[in-house]
Amino acid sequence: MSEPRIDAERFLGRLDAFARIGATPKGGVNRQALSPEDRRARRLLTELGQARGFGVAQDAIANLFIRRDGKDNSRPSFLIGSHLDSQLTGGRFDGALGTLAAFEVLEALEDASVETPFPVEAVAWTNEEGSHYQPGCMGSMAFASGSIPDQWTTLRGHDGSLFADELQATLEALPEAAMRPLGFPIAAYLELHIEQGPSLECENIPVGIVEGIQGTRWLEVEITGQSAHAGTTALALRRDAMAATVRGLAQLYAEIMPRDERARFTVGRLTLEPGTVNAIPEKVAFTIDLRHPEIGALDSLETLIASTFAEVAAAGRCASTLRRIFDMPPTVFSPPLLERLREAADGLGLASKSMLSGAFHDALFVNCVAPAAMIFVPCRDGLSHNEAEYVEPEQAVAGARMLLASTLKILENR
Ligand code: GLV
Ligand code: MN
Ligand code: MN
Image (cartoon, rainbow, N blue to C red):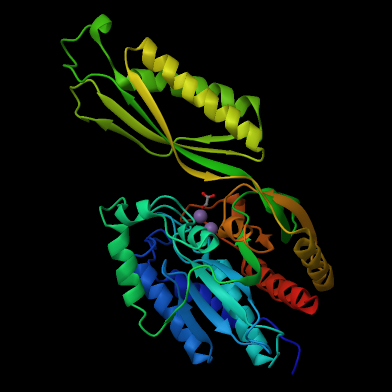
């Protein structure tokens, strides 16, 4: 047995190889969950795992596990990983960095013939992004609850594809992967990810020790009025769903984020019906992504949003409905694991800082069933969910070293 070490060249080569799967002309990645591109990425990871003699398994939601056995294989595994799906105009590192660093950790352990006390597994969770099918984090959510909600089977993606069909095709595309029950017991979980925000880069700190994740709610709002002729309908007779929407949104944009710097309010999708140039819109449907580190604040912001749209709709002789489609409460990660992460950073001589994650991650759901924690590395200009997303090679490698050193610290303490 020798000292395990990250092979920087191999790891950076892997990042490049996966970035070619679903590559976009602007240098980013479009690898929608359960799409043919996602299947190619899963196949590549599977083949890399098999080439090293690791076990490959998937569960009913197509979470993919690459397993390196340990001394006592009857004990629960230590899990490390992230996701391989991307946004439509996503970057090369969101998800892939953590998944491939987890695989590199397995290879480093194998190269050095380290016998771990129990198995260590790299996982690629299914549909973290929530861009192909909503909600996001389907894989980790189903893993944590041990079941797939009935309503997911009838979900359709933005391209009209049926979630259930694509899930089945994805599972069938990897016949060599053993089927595993959903939500088997694990010892702990660790995830490396890019920060997706600017603070590490601004402060020139290579490692973020992520103590928790702010809460996220996804809301679907519909404002309904009446379609009528754009040219002949006078103001007094209009029941214009768009006019009511704009009034409501203007109030909320002015109120929510300017008054509370920790709040995040985003309308990322909006559709109008009938959607012609010369008809007053009868229906406006849009999404709201609402985030805050405190659950009480999320509750009051949701109440404010509902009452604002009820008022503007009533004033414009329209109706409003609001539906919560996704709810992730704020998360606090495991203090003992965070301590091991700090020791690992100190041991590597890497400056680190404790922080909260503004983005949600699979670790949020895994934290419900086992101790979990996350490591962040900086990304250029804090930019993510963008094809220009970029991580300096040495920062990506430092992240993989942190993941390896943290894994060894955690295993030492078991
Ligand atoms: C994850 O991609 C998020 O939207 O936070
Ligand atoms: Mn991600
Ligand atoms: Mn993302």
